[in-house]
Length: 319
Image (tube, rainbow, N blue to C red; front, side, top):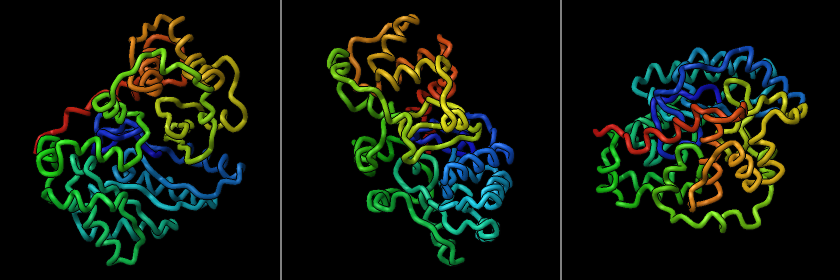
């Protein structure tokens, strides 16, 4: 994940990216450190995401050169295609990507992105990739059928999409995606799911062992490991590999050893007062971690993530 800044602020974004996030970009030094760790761990392929990687194309090429030098294969680079407005520029960018051994782009295409990027642009980028013999895939192409009901030449607000597609398009799109309800997507769960008593949520909850899985994990521009599906938790990648120091990341340790029950106990001891009901254990966990990020010494929790998660969901610019 080379950045958190994005021209969009999609309501399903697990990483709560937006135009308001800092414009920091992964440095050559951080990229080199990450590649060295990956190679040492016998991981020789990655994909590049954000944020929106193409907001800083020079920075993107720098990261890709580092990966190329380290013999780390880049399977694809993700983009929402906001930049596909000029055919010559697209051709130039594709040639630059080929020069650093990148031959495929993942192009975002769904109703959530269409709230910020006219979906004609992903389709145009796909066509230009075809014309220039460059690999691509649309993520997810299945949404073309529903998007066919809306104008492709402009971005659209929620009200327009509800009228054109379905009053329930947000819930339906999330279900078709199979989303993890983290980051900004937590608002989708809050809107559409029914709360249940906290006692029911806490019943027989195991430790969160997925925090240490290496199944499709991410490393961000600061060299922090992001557990799969559990955003808002970030620990230096080098420590994840060499061994996380004890008594350093209390929220992470609580979840890893005792699950949401132990995290809630820790949060209560710090002064957190839970509500009587939540829509899921993930919602309870999110609320507890949000509070801890602002009120306790938990360096693994980033307040910016939680604040960004709770903004933009109902603030899509009307067009």
